[in-house]
Length: 588
Image (cartoon, rainbow, N blue to C red; front, side, top):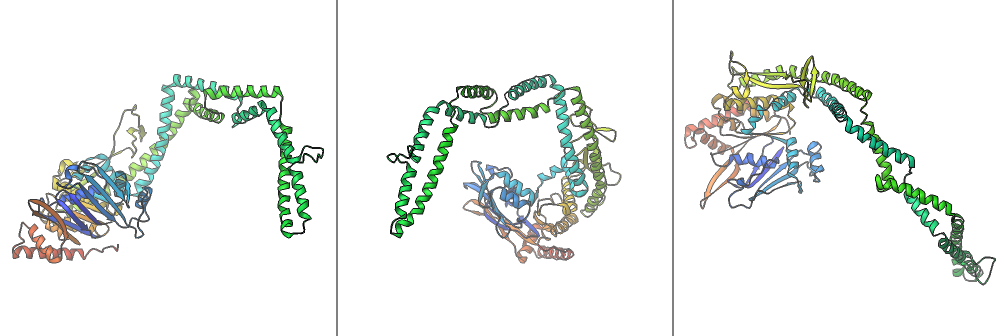
């Protein structure tokens, strides 16, 4: 949930702190006081588009900072940690968004600078903002399909997951078959070049690291005389000139003499050094042996040198054409073999691919039918549930229909799929087109909801959908910006009651101008506007119970100065409190 939010330098708000309730928080205020800046701040905090025009005049930048609680242990925490930030020990994290007067935007999460997209990803998991403009999402077929999928839950999600998995395989085979069929001549030429290269490489049969080993061998054979002289001199220095010549003792002989002198000394300190000389003698003896082995391995055979040079020349022909070294040549050959496996344009290969395509298409059609059946079953239940909610929102004669249909397409459509004898478009979300239709009264034709509903009715339809889908909502915070626009009277009371019901399982934040809605809130925030030196400033404060009465009376057509208005406000609060006691609030 969003525990608190601070807004600085945004629109008419100079500096305001919003402490939000875990249940139902309402924001009210006079027209022009800056209520919409609360939602604008949430949009910015959610990674929305920044606008320099919303930066307060005279301010260098606008800053919105929010503290989210309950982030630990879920996908939201992974989003935070993947961005290099940390969630606090209490499971909270602070998000910040700033917009400078020149339009530059910056985002921070958990004290770390992050791309704005990270805030957008986090907000998708934590909150959903429904403003007046967000009602337009109901006009998009994809959003209407998402509504039924959210309502159906696992019944659609399961077969849809299988559908998407098979569809990805089907698309790969369809694409490969089309490419092989249309580019057969070009691919045949490429295959010839690859086969020629492989033949050249296989004729030489290079081995990994062989070029490096050959280079070292050729260097050694070319300088064999100098190497023999150096090794022989070193061996003589270690072991002596040979034949036991006492005039030219080697290092071993000298160390042996030192050992004998120390061993016969009458001093313990000197005798204690003798074992170390023994170790040095063993080490030198090993070096002498290795030098002898090295001398034996030196080969001055001109024929072998010639063979090594010829082999090196063969390898260089390959490295000039295919890679910088032999290891790269071998990697090229492996890649060429893989590419050749996908370039077979023979009739047999194309027939095999076509058979695989048809096999996957049949399997995909089965999954598509399962998805459509699940959506069809959920459509009736969803329509009934939304219609029941609308009945309580002063739309008693209205009825919602949810239609699930498939659009037939020509056989040459790239995503054409035959399902139950019909050729339909197989999109990433299935083959179905979902549409919400509204009958405004009995006997009226069912029309697309955006054509049949007025602005206020569309708001109520959206609220009814949110109430019905509350059990499926993956976010914890729901924000409504004047969702009650164009509504009044009993319908306004019902909207407040349903928002309070939503607050049983979600954190709800509502910006409203209706006292009937505000009366149901657990916490009432008011945006106050004042003028200081000709400059308009707005702030946000929490209302006590007595102050709520005054504010509700003001909202009742400016009746805050009358006893009648106050009495009406008190009556609204009492009725709302009585209604809320019927709800069982979940512990947070």
